[in-house]
Every structure is written in C-alpha cells, then in structure tokens.
Image 1 (cartoon, one colour):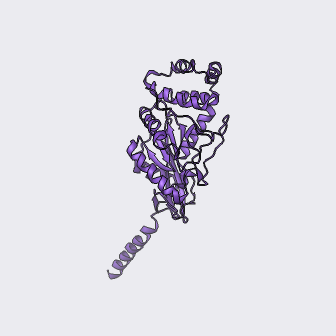
Image 2 (image 1 turned 90 degrees about the horizontal axis):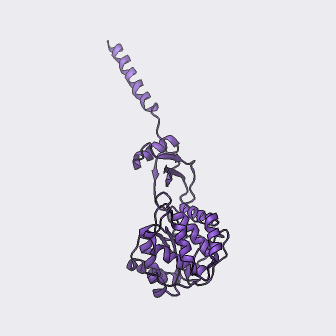
Image 3 (image 1 turned 90 degrees about the vertical axis):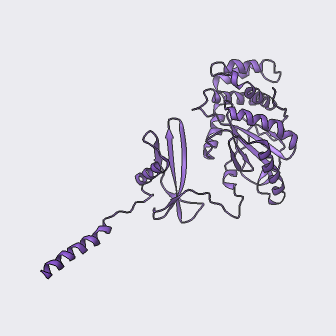
Length: 323
C-alpha cells in the first residue's frame, strides 16, 4: 500500500512539474496577441480594422522596440505607438524626452513651413503652426482670435503659418475649399489671407454645391486675382497635391482634430482662448532669449518645398477678419 501511494504521489508530482512548462507566455511581439490586447484595452470591436506593425528597435529608448497599432474605421484612422520590452512581456505608451534637447524636438523636426501661407515676421522667436479646416466652426472662432490679436500684440515676435487640414469624413466641402485657397495663393499671398478671412466669415452660407460660385463671387472685384485663371485652377484641382501634402504632414504629426496649434513645437489641441495662448507666447519669448532651441533661428528642420509654390520669406500684410 505504501508503494502504491508513493507511485500515486510521484505521478501527481510529475503532473504538477509538467504543468507550468506547458503554459506558453504571451508576447506583445506576436501580432495576433498584440492586436487582441489592444482591442480589449481600447474597446475596439470587429468593425474597426487593426494592423500591427513589425517591431523595430526604438531610437528613443534603447533596449525596447517600437510597435505601432493602426486602427481604422472607414476614412477615420488613428495610430497608437507602443514601446515593447525585448521579451515582449511589457508594453507601455509614454513620451520619451531627451534632457539634452528641447522636449518638443520630435515634432519640431516634423513641422514643415516652407511654401505655407504665413504672416508675421521672418526670424521671430516664436513660430506658430496651425492645422485648420475651413468648414470647422471651432476653427472659425480660433482664426478670428488669431487674426485679431497676433499682429497687434506681437508685431515682430511671432511668425504664424497656416496648414490646411480638411477633415474629409466630417466636412464635405473642406478639402475643395483648401484646394481653392491654394489656387488663390498661387496668384497672391496677401489675397490668400483675405480669402481665409472671407471663407470663415461666410462658412454657414457655403455648401459643397455652391462653393465654386461663392469663390468666384469673392474673386470678382479683386484686381490682384485673375478670375479666369482661378476658375481653371479650381476646376482642375491643380493644387490638390499641395493639400494632400499638408494632410500627410499632419498625419505624420498625429494630428487628429482641428484646430490644432504648435507653438514652438508645443502641441495645443482644440480651441484655445487668447489669454492662455498669450501666456504661452510670452513664456516662449522670454525662454528663447537664452535657450535658442525653437523659433526660426533655432536650426530646426522647418522647411519643405511644396509643389508649385515659391518660398515665402517676407512679412505678409494682415488685417483683422472682416465682419
């Protein structure tokens, strides 16, 4: 009986010992595992398509891999970037900062301004880049705030760049308006800003069906605009590649809403009030006196040749939005 019991206990011991060895640990480096985990994490049901990238060594944090999860639902999409431990057991989302560099350097290096419509002073210590949508009501309010306050309060200290970023899945005429605005820019940089103010002011009157008619009405009294050339540009969508470029740039910067400002690389999503923005600008003006790591004299990569555009280096006329 003792021998029988010993054999039974030995069998149990063998079973217990073998149990853990048969358990396979999950790894975030396995794409199906990572997809299932992120779906659960962010409540992504089967309607949402998910793609997991191949892992690659992280440039920001040695010893970890970068993995991007791309989620899409129709025309809407968003990228989720993760750092994954080399054994695949741990994942985390985090901003990784290099203490030797401006904390906003990764975005500064991606921001492109050459060829973009702009106003203010070349070489200013503060550069603002706005991603905006002509059909967005919040963009309309922020545009009025920026145009009314920036040139009066900061005539030499701020250079403002405007990037058309139409949200096509939400706004049916936004991209066409962005293309039309670039047609205006090809003829006259100052008139671009009049068009910018006009289209926001008349936003509620415009539809996808009457957009061209309204644009041509705006252009008719303009001596600096050749209406025939403008109409041909609008009809052929000749500047669409430029708008596609700004959209691609925005996606590279993970822009997923409008309006969105970058103030010396500092990301400010959503509509901001003037007092808050003024505080940030004042801080940056003072900080850049010694830091010299942002603004237009920082040596940052702030250039991109856009097709069909000449480099704009001069201060452009600015008038408050027309009411």
